[in-house]
Amino acid sequence: MSFLRHILLLLLGLVIASGVSAEQRKPEDNVTFIVVGKKDHYRQDENGNLKLLSYFLFTDVVLTRDGRMNHATFTAPNGTRMYYPAVHGRKSSYGMHFGQRRWMDMAFPDGDYRIDISTPDGDVSGLTLSLSGADFPRTALITLKQAGAAVPVNNVDPDRDLSITWPPFSEGRGDRNPVLEDIIFVAVHDCDNNRIGFGGRPRDGTPYLNYQDTEFTLAADILEAGKKYAMFVEHAILADIDESTGIFGIASYAPTTYLDFATIGENKGKACPAVMPRLEPGQSDR
Image 1 (cartoon, one colour):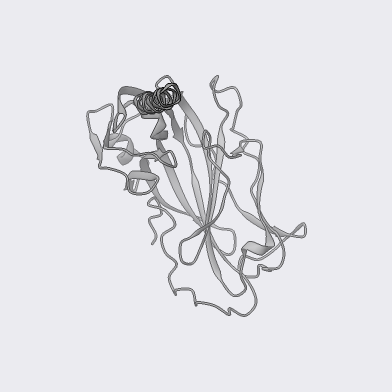
Image 2 (tube, rainbow, N blue to C red; image 1 turned 45 degrees about the vertical axis):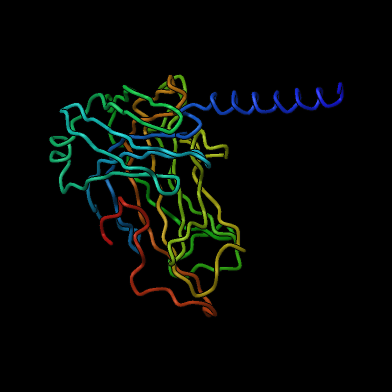
């Protein structure tokens, strides 16, 4: 009886511990990262010329790897609301394009943006990010390099490492706020829109790029011969940061440069489409 009683008590303890563990889950166990920001988007052509595509107001909610969200609401300083249904995948995004900066600022003025998030493990209400007090830095001009030399965007050797480079993010600072330095985002997608390279994001458990970085490298074994690729580089000035709720939130001004490139050689697999897919919701020329 003593042995049986010991087993029963052990099982009871495991059940209680499991219940406590479940009760201890919090909203930040579901949502890791939120951002509200303004962008100006540019297309870089094969000759290195930049063309303005649009101004863009955006907000993102990024979940943890096993996170869930019921819904979220962003409220602009003028009362305009952006509503998010449940997330499918890890990220839910909202964005609106404008032909001129003044139109964007009229619809979504600088100031305090309120975020309310509902998760299966509780809600976060009244998180505020101040999108103000800063402006767009200069737009990144991208240069592709292999073996230390610049290469044409349509002449990339798939058998060599590819360095994606840009001039120094001179407006970037490490002391803009006490939490995080200004950062750089880089992403590369293949012609099926699969992400094959990513510079990382803060609080995601991986390394990320900051204002001091001037390049991101793709290993040679990632690229395929005779293929087309799409990428962007984004320099983000972090106007505000809040992590008081356990969810990491930033407000940013971030110009983005889009660039397509292609590898040399014979494509022995699936042919790329004539028109590349949209890299992200903010890309307005596809």
